[in-house]
Image 1 (cartoon, chains in turn red, blue):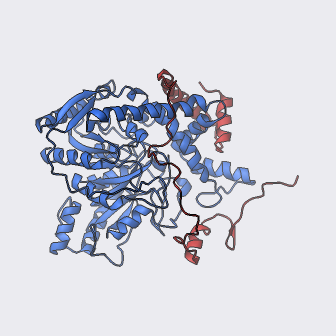
Image 2: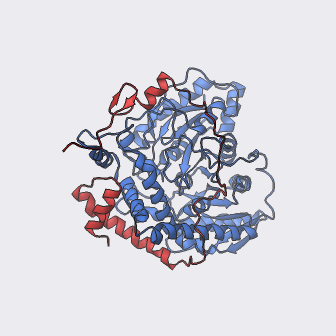
Image 3: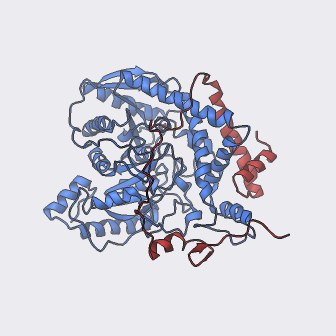
Amino acid sequence: MLSDKEVAHIAKLARIELKPAEKDGLKKDLSSILDYIGKLNEADTSSVQPLYQTTGLVNSTRSDEPRKEFPMTEKLNELLIGQAPAKHDHFIKVRPVLNKK
Amino acid sequence: MIPEKLTIRSAREGLARGDFSAPELFEHYNKRIRAQNGELNAFLTVFDAPEEFDTEGTLAGVPCAIKDNMLIEGTRTTAASKILDNYTAAYDATVIKKLRSAGAVFLGKTNLDEFAMGTSTENSAFGPTRNPLDTDRVPGGSSGGSAAAIAADLAVFALGSDTGGSIRQPAAMCGIVGLKPTYGRISRHGLIAMASSFDQIGPLTKTVYDAALVLNELCGHDVFDSTTVDREIPDFTANLDRSIKGLRVGVPKEFFRAGLAKEVEERIRATIKKLEDMGCQVSDISLPNFEYALAAYYIAVPSEISANLARFDGIRYGHSSKKAATLLDTYLESRSEGFGPEPKRRIMLGAYALSSGYYDAYYLKAQKVRALIKKDFDDAFQKVDVIVGPTSPNTAFKIGEKASDPLALYLEDIYTVPLNLAGLPGISIPCGNGEDSGMPVGFQITGRSFDEATVLRVAHQLEQIT
């Protein structure tokens, strides 16, 4: 069973603020899922290399030249930048990272 | 008069003969959606007719439905999440471009489990989709809206996405055809990413022939998705009728385990018998590490989810908390308010599996088990040409029946996730109804990497006699 402290730590890593009711539910759910996942320890993987993807492709590269598939237009700019909750002209506004205190 | 249950083939023939026009066909489906969507909740967005209809192309004038995690420029795309409630797609997904150039028209966007995480479509932030065959039951998931739309004849064909069974399982539960192509066949550019080393787009259709036809249009290398493989694309409709006599069919003994419903097992065994009767060489095989597949999946996939969904931060698009005073609060509050319970659960699980001190025990271990699963399949395909079994352990269950137990819902994917771990193609086709529930049972056929042709051929020939 995960502890309250562990759940709080994971939530912080995940950048999710949990309500008190959510914490208990997640503690229970995550613990039972992790119990099931414990099954993995029965598999002998001592001589196995991990498999991260299945295509067999290695270093899929392209030539280092500018591409023109998405020429910037007013309309595209509006769809890309215009949907930001806070903006100024064609720029996205964010809150300061460093606070004066 | 437009006939019921049009397939792509019959729609194209009707259009060619002049039985109906493309605008009439669109109007017909638009009306059906408006009449039935109140009850089924299969569509989240319904489009008006386009101004012009193409007359050239394999899919010219054929109306289709798109799972709402694929982008269509200038239209709302939600992934069934509150965090994207107000999001308008900035460009067309590659699959949308390809369908457009084949002449297809879009009826609307279909419901799904939030960010495609689920097996019942109950995790949608916009309410569950109902199974048209029994509206007290789920349609499966996560492409439940697309599957329900096809089963209720609200579109000629649909697209879904499959990370661990999300095309095949809802197809099984709604009694239709669902194809997950090989990983690398189809570009995911413009698909809202869930787990990038697993996600694959594919068709949900009324017939196997239609699935082959749509696959023909969707395949190919794309500069915007570097996992797409540049290789020759066969005409998948070409050999559907070629005899399957002598084809080697493997039946893994591990599939017949506790948890497999009796009514499902009966239909699966009866269908395997049919393959024998058709001259296939059926043999028992073993996938020794099958038992570990689901556990490996539920580490690897949440890990990728926790990374992919980090982009939803309340800064560039989507829901942004009004309460936040600092940058960190913007992240914390926007994500807390915007994500539903299942994405939160999986993001947390993934963050845990990747966190310092747990990486080796969980993430690395899961990727090693993934290698074992792939090797099991590679070994099996030395001896057989296709592997068959159930798509899911149960038929469609009641809405709410499993909602309080995430693990019970995860177990619905036990037969579908091994293919995603190994990147293999698989199809689910209906093989009759279960004796107890009266609901459809799905028969899953798996083939070698990039051998969709054989998978489709077996499926097509079974379909002709079912």
